Amino acid sequence: MKENTNRGFRMTKESIIPTRIIDCFQTENAEELLVSKEPCVSFGNEPCTCFTEKNSWALLDFGKELCGGLRLITRSAPVGTEIRITFGESVSEACSVIGEKNATNDHSPRDITALLSTWSDLTFGQTGFRFARVQLLSDSPISVQSIFAVSQLPEIPREAVIKTADRKLNKILDTAAYTLKLNFQNGYIWDGIKRDRLVWCGDLHQEIITSLYLFGDNANITNSLSFLRHCTPDVSWINNIPTYSAWWVIIFCDYCAYTDNQEYFRQNKDFAESILNKISSHITAEEEMNFGNDQLSYFLDWPTCDTPDAKIGAAMLMLLAAKKYLAFGDCAVCSDIIKKLNRYLTIPCKSKQVYAFQTLAGGGANSCEFLENGGAVGLSTFMAYYILKADALTGGNNMLSIIREYFGAMLSRGATTFWEDFDISWLENSGRIDALPKHGQKDLHGDHGAFCYQGFRHSLCHGWSCGVVSFVIEHLFGIQIQNGGKRITVHPHTSCPDFKLKMPLTKGWLRINYKKGILEVKAPPDVEIFQ
Image (cartoon, rainbow, N blue to C red; front, side, top):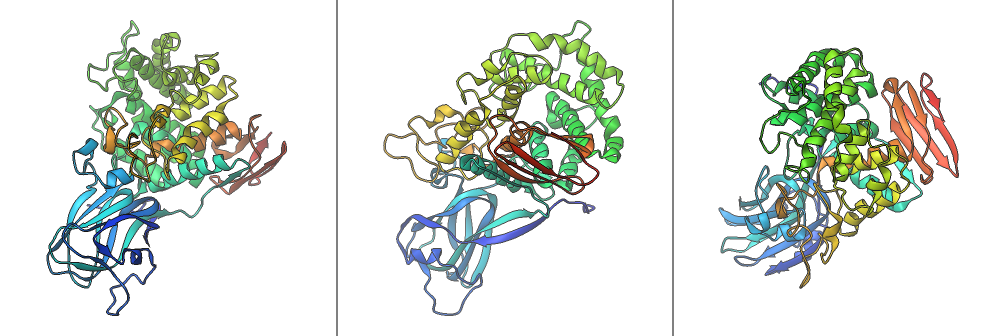
């Protein structure tokens, strides 16, 4: 197989010691695991941690979500010593067994057995985790010099710096950026580092837009888009979901408009048009869509799947794809799709996310009252960006408070990355992810979730949750990048706090200082700035 020479960001690995020992059983000198030592097997007499008997264990916290595995430096262990390592994105997941509250080894085994030996330096596992439980399964005691988490992260040469006068907002933005950064793996943009270590096209939109703002144009973006194109047969939909092919066109258009990458547009123009022609062929002259009877035939998101809103949401995605592509020039099939699907703009719906997409596609002129009803109620980490965006476009004024309520709630319960999903109702009578539930409490991780992400299968680091960064840049800071970065409009929202921003452009940097209503903007000489 030919190696891709344009693999994206270089990956670096770091060995990280635990920040705390949550609990342990039948271990001696467990506190030695918190001591920073040379990461090499020692022949000396330095203190070690001893797992004294069969089923002794230690439960470790590495302080934040990581992508990687566990490195054990062992001083003494009889040949064939067996241990069990259980990784967890929450403490309770790290203490689970397969099958308990939907705990799985799907996509990346996180509950494994491994063999140790004397004077060994071995790394086990490749998953997303913050917590790990190490248990001795053999009869003889072992002596462990160090247990490290091995973190794999991209080495990014150009990275945005965003600081506002709102400390909670800063923490939300930093957490969203770190979530996305963790999902840059092996030259692609994954959706999750524990489960969904895949390139999902529907999820990719927010990941790519946020990546452009935070890290500039990079090969991870085009690698992911091109991969989806090349692995999709002509007779299939991307990821086998009709709406995900529409998402590909939307992402392709947004990427080319932002970067003015005309070569990439020419390379993929025919593919984009083949998708649009295929979409049109599944819409009858009577303006009825016929994409099949599968559960995912009209998929916008899981909460609306198999509901009357699903078909409206699917129509809005396809309408958006046609409108975005039409902006690049005349396209008869785009005009045909728009004509056929316009009627879906005004069909009543019940969910905030579908209403938001009606707004984004050109309808829903008075949607902000509906979208802001209940504050964070009805938001999901996937759909928050689109709901907030539609709210802003129709005159909403409470976006910042909704962001602080929704994303701040995850932080308040121990999150260091944002999740595959989160419902504000989960807070009721539940604890934190960095502690076991107290008596009578619900498990925030194990007792919640739905659809394909029930219980511990639920990913607590999902790339699509990064869209809050894009929303803040576009609609709170009021920054619009146009003409491939040659024209930039900056008009902060009335609720925008003071902020400083350094953001990579296709050529150079955008620097903004906004304080007490005064705006200072610096950009490369060939960039027009409008305030």
